[in-house]
Structures are given as structure tokens and as C-alpha cells.
Length: 220
Image (cartoon, rainbow, N blue to C red; front, side):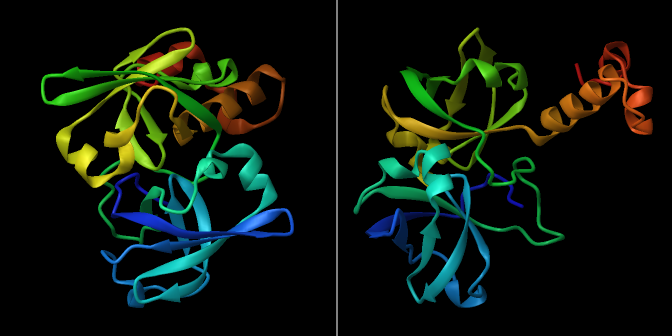
């Protein structure tokens, strides 16, 4: 589990093709890699990957064919910069929101516009995921926890403050940039509960949940 607060920006040193998938070698001298162990989860641009080898200045990780198909990692190349966040520990500050590192879809930056000291990004996403996006809700873009400022039929807008631009790759986005999107986990679970209720299931938790209930308790 992650928080969406980027700990370092790393650089892809090598992408090695390995029988249909590939191995990434990532360099990031700003994290204490000696504190971590082989097998730990690390978020790379919002994708939960396993460290298969640790070095003093970074780590190697394998990217499966399934992950290649459902994320934007295939757009990386040697020299690309990536957002990094090691998995959180129990008791850590939850500075962003709960992030699983399981990417839902690939979004595309449609517009970039300065707003005072921030940058407004308008990001398009597949229609099937529009129902999870609400104004002032949370969303994870390439591993960065962001607040949604506006929503349209096919896109949403977020603001990138100077700190976020400096501490992640979000400051480098341009129209056409592909990004990994993970919608809010709470929205996913609420949908599951409502579907169980509407399907006539026997889930006791869903039996008393209605749109009026969710609205009264601040979820809708």
C-alpha cells in the first residue's frame, strides 16, 4: 500500500527485453536503499513493482506482459525519469490517500495551462472510469496523490503546485503525455456494495446502503 506522496524521482538506466516482458534498472540516489530488502514493493509511476535486486544507488524490477498491457510503462526508455515511492509502513503519515499501486487505466494529458504559480492539467480518461471521478475527490496520476478540481464527460482537471512539480515528474507533462491512473479505492468499494445490493445478493453490509444513505453521510 502507498500514499501517493513521491519520495524520489529516479532515472531509467536500462530496459532489458526478456522473453515478452522486460526488466527495469532504476537509479535513484536520494533513497536509503540499504533500509529495504529484495522482494519489497516499490511504486514506479504509480505501478506496484517488486524489487528483485537492490544496489546502493537503486534497484532492478521485472515488468510482466500484463503490466505492460495495462499501464504506460511501455512508453519509458533509458533516460526517462520516474516517480518512486516505497511501500508505506504501519504508523506512517498518510499524507495523500490510500493507493494500491494497481493501475486502472491509462490517461492522456489534453491541456496544460499556467494558473498563478500552479499548472492546471486537463487529463482525459476512458469513459468506463468516468463514474469514479468526482470534484474534490482523490485520484492517483503516475503515483501522485492529487485532488480533482473539475470534471467533464471525458476528462478531469488537477492543479500541480510548485512543490509537486519539483518533487515529481508532473512538472514535465505536456499535451499528449500518457499517465497511469488509479481511481479512489473508496469509490471502488462503494460501487461493489451498491452492485451487491442491486443484484439481490445477501451481503448484509450492502442491505442498508442506498443513495440517500451515502448522501447523508457525505459519500455522494
